[in-house]
Image (cartoon, one colour):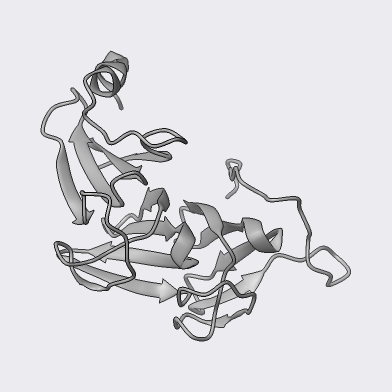
Length: 193
């Protein structure tokens, strides 16, 4: 439960706590473990801040605006427009790295690429950077069962990373055809998941 007023966010923006770009400072916020997780695509980094708007901490990425596609230690890892964030039940942080066309994971002090290889593509398959690919993904949502839904805007589809099989598939209609959207963005699940 969030106990603080959302005024801290307004104050943080007004005092330039976050980097400003033409599109805004940050693109997504998730709440878990009594803190907010923020993707700041201006500084190409992911931050946490507590409920009171205190203790802003960069948890991964450059923080100075420099971009790249580098896995490894959180301080050395690089993103190119981290656009969406969600937190799994085990505390792993998943990030949509839009211009690297990738799904990334922050686990402990390590950033890894789950799928996508820095080049736009459209392929389903096992989670491996060269096998499952995206084209400018822009949102993700982790279901209570661990499945991850991804808005693959450039391909106009919703993708599913199955927690059971570890494979990425494209959602289909009842006839087996891919569900096609015009640059899907928002994702939500009902009470049944």
